[in-house]
Length: 277
Image 1 (cartoon, rainbow, N blue to C red):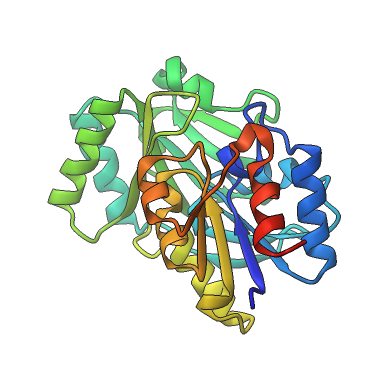
Image 2: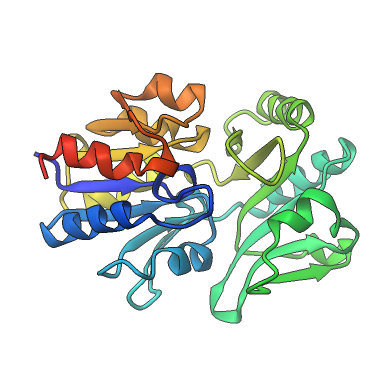
């Protein structure tokens, strides 16, 4: 019997217009009404995720920044937080600079109205696409200020696939076990994006930790997603589902691949079938 359903946002619950379809909304609301614990598990920052799911019927637990910060959307209380230690944060910035990559730093300054920090010279190209003009929850700072930040949730590097993939391999070889990281492929702002986080900060590790805290067993979890940051969650859940539009790694890890993509309410369709709604 399944009790908890972890749902990714982009490419999964959201369509290509970054909206929840009526069919997906109705399916999630029905699950909530039937007593299932629905958890949003996303690489997005908390504020963005909360705004995107505000039309659902109930407050939700949101695992933001790939599980590095978990809050209840009812009152924004932090349930779990995981930060990069200072040495690891400084090392990733140093390595990126040597490889001519500039990062966007995600920080836990939600109550101060700040989610991201970017270097002053980086307001170009992929970085500008990543920042959200509508909510303005970011700071632009000189390089020296970037090195003083604390409560760092993640550093992300959007760019050319080969450059990003190559950088991820270098970091993995030089700093084994120092970071939880992945390369995203199903994104609209760039060909790819590398994310570096606390080694304990993955969607699955945090989801498992949260599930245990509320008495939910591993085999009672359904996890559904589409990209490489969802792989561990899909692989380890009691039932792992990948979207039709998902990456090759996500599909390979899944028990089921949806018949429909995220632009045709694939999430609603598969959950209705699996749970006999």
